[in-house]
Length: 256
Image (cartoon, helix red, strand yellow):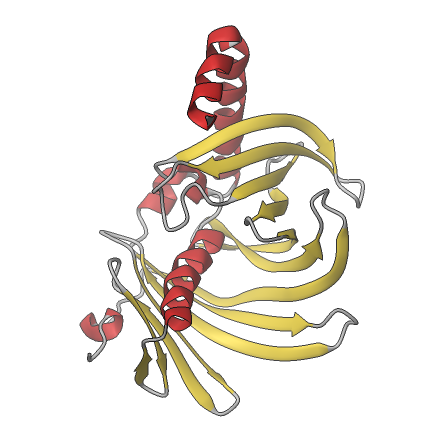
């Protein structure tokens, strides 16, 4: 049904659809240029950083603080290693690009929840830190939805982002809205409909590393379907960001 409806709309209003796609692509190009340019990003082979996470409950109490070390191979293919300590235990996620594992104190956790966490967390975290460059990934569907005003009165471009089924790790499942500064195209916020709920994220600060702009701090809020936030859920801050660091060959392997 969805495919038939899209074809019908293109047949009725082809000029409008083409215009919207062109605007969206131009907007993404401007955001990428602001962040350092696609050529500079594409030249990077690895990325490592510390992801500091502060989680809060619905009444504002800090319930968890974690510092995760993230290591990604960007080229020639995606691989990931994430490690951290929590409650006296050592956690590790390994993704070799084809399979992922969650390890607890060095032991593979083979329950379904752990397998899903390993896959989704490794791809999801790399997706977020790689913005806006990831908006050029195959299977990305871009639609420009005009000028909008956020709740804090920031005037922004509104970009709707969906993915073809099978694209990436969650193609066809999620709908994103990215809000870019009206004048310089820097990310201001995003809104996610992940099928089972909603979240709203404010991009607070950025840092340039090797000429590439990376998010330094962002705040994620619980939200409803119309972007009304209810409480602060998580503060993320990225530190110790480095490109092209050499990794040992066994970093993305596990002993089965």
